[in-house]
Length: 86
Image (tube, rainbow, N blue to C red; front, side, top):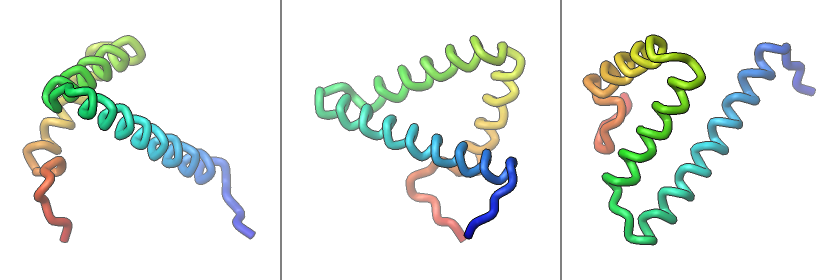
């Protein structure tokens, strides 16, 4: 029997929600591509929609901090499709 404490259970729930959201996003992306929408357009609108919602929820300062973190992750190559994990 698995005994999970509140924080561990919450972490598992959040991970599951992220996985489901990822699957929804991939499905919407595939639908857009199959409808002839270019990947660049899908990406830009996804980023714009996400930033708009995050600013609504958390404010510009917090989102700017997040964007700077994303910038660093991009610079480190985290999002490259050809990166290798060692």
